[in-house]
Length: 376
Image 1 (tube, rainbow, N blue to C red):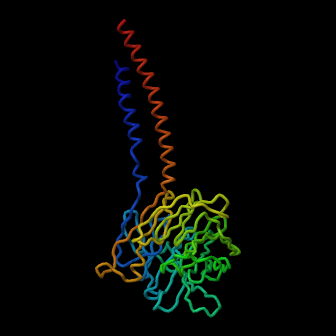
Image 2 (cartoon, rainbow, N blue to C red; image 1 turned 45 degrees about the vertical axis):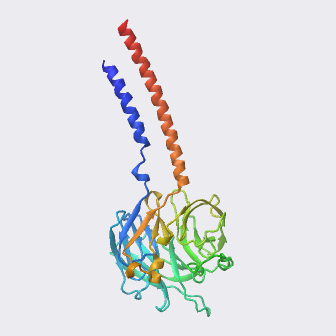
Image 3 (cartoon, helix red, strand yellow; image 1 turned 30 degrees about the vertical axis):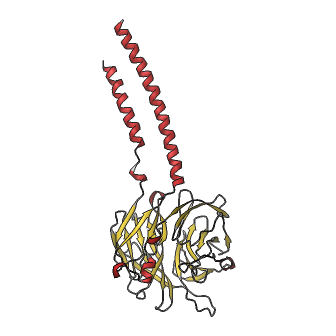
């Protein structure tokens, strides 16, 4: 009798276990963070692996904030010595030295100013240095724009100049120099349908690869470049399509794949030859109204974009006449990558189902044999 009860109990429990496996895990649900910081209009976004928080810059307030996964905002850096209304654009975390690097830009009517600031994340955001970035020695009246920032394993920072298509380098002591002025940067054709939001924006997002090179995207041409981390020599990455209006870029640690954000799309890009060429294997439509400008890779290689609504802040086109208070950081997933995981899950479930069927059949046969013996 005891054996019969055990068989019946297992017959009930095993299907319930299989059904629970079919229920989606909360870990696979898309994560959306709404955070409140009046008139912030952040352009830059980076993940700090030490604190497990996001860090965002600001359009005019000379502040940098941490944002938790629950949307709790804390001001970690407030630098009143920066020019009033200066914009904090690209951000990079130097994990080895626990420093935060920030690109500083002054837009008209402020006097021209492009700089890199370094802050100590160990000591309450104390500024370590503020390095003015040198301009080219020519008569060009176009002001420099220090945009995105990347950092290598030695603590050297690389900053893109979106106005003049070159890259600065700032060493760990704050000494700045012009690093790469490759002719390739100015030889690409601006896309014909470039609108005012990115027509004059050249080199933009930049990321460092531990194998000793940088990947840089160019907004108004949609091109990507591979730049040697020592010589500054650049090569054009042969992509299967142009990444038009490309802005921020980030690299995933587990597979080396790159994600590139624009105002309309997020591209998932991979390479099988160390970025001699690359293929866009998926693209995701984004919320154009939110004006996404930055992308970062957080814990477990999860990809997040920032909806900082920067253009609204720049133009002063406030809804109901008041500056916005709420902004978003949103996880973006590749359906093609998720599809592969789903297929594996289906195969696992089919295997478990078959194993359960064999077990059930064997036990039922055993039960019938025992009952026959009792009857006879």
